[in-house]
Structures are given as structure tokens and as C-alpha cells.
Image (tube, one colour):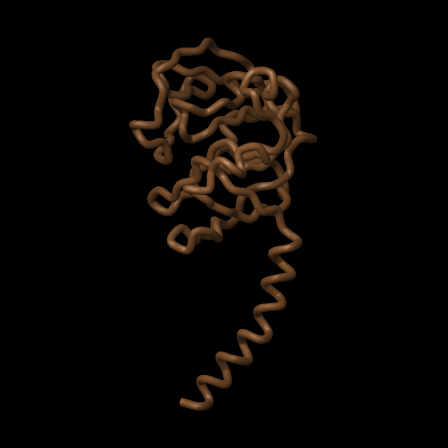
Length: 186
């Protein structure tokens, strides 16, 4: 029993400084609509002005650099285009799901997303969070990405302020670390 205790204490002494170092070197954000659904992370808008209003649901996550080309369905951290401030009353750093890639034809029909004429399978969208809007087809420009929140009925996203330039992409969410009941790695 004594050996087990010593091993535990030694592990904590080594791990605590490492965890503190990691915590101070990664992006830490809280998301108002962060939810874990079937072990999938679904997120909506995040920025500094939301941080103080989300104390009842403080979800923190870690981001890492984008490696290679961003992929449809990834949850991405990015700087919003200037139109986000004008259209949504908030701008800065947001977290949304990447839905449309450069060159894609995007449209929404009765709340369902279509990419290049084919309905997108979105198991991460809860029925009560889907909107019922129909929006005409657009083509996503070269080096730009179309972002949408998973809480579609209240998300202010690319449907309102347009696509996001590639240079605005910061990273992708790879782990949720708070609250403990929602810890997950993507």
C-alpha cells in the first residue's frame, strides 16, 4: 500500500507543473452553447463578451493548430470577419463547426444544409436546435470557409456575416476539459 501511495504522490508532483504549463500555453475559452452529445463536441459562439454571461454553463476547451486542410465537420476557432460585429453585435474570436469548403455550393432548405445539391448528414444537430429557414444557394469563394453553430435556431454565423478567410482560422478544438462530466478528446 505504501508503494502505491508514493507512486501517486510522485506522479502528482511531476504532473501538476506540466498541467499548469499546458494550461497557460493553450487557448482557453468558454462557450455559451457548448454541449457534449453522444460524445461529440458541439459548440456555438465564443468571444470575450460572452465569457461573463456564461457562468451558468462554463465549458472550457483546448485548441491546437490546424494541420493540413481544414475538414468539413471540424470545430474551428477563428477571428470573425468585420461584418459579424455589425450583424450579430459581437465579433472577435468565435468557435463554430466548419460546414462549407472553398468551391462548395451551400444552401439551406427548411433548416437542413445542402452541399453541392446533396443534403448534409448532421447527427450533431439536436432537432430542437434546428431552425426552419430556407436560404438560396451560394458558392463559397476560394480560400474561404462557411461556419455554422450547432444551435442553429440562435446561432449568428456565416449565414449572417458570410464566409471566413483562411487567414482568420486559428485552430481546431481537440479537447473539452471543463466541466469534468464533459471531458473529451476529439
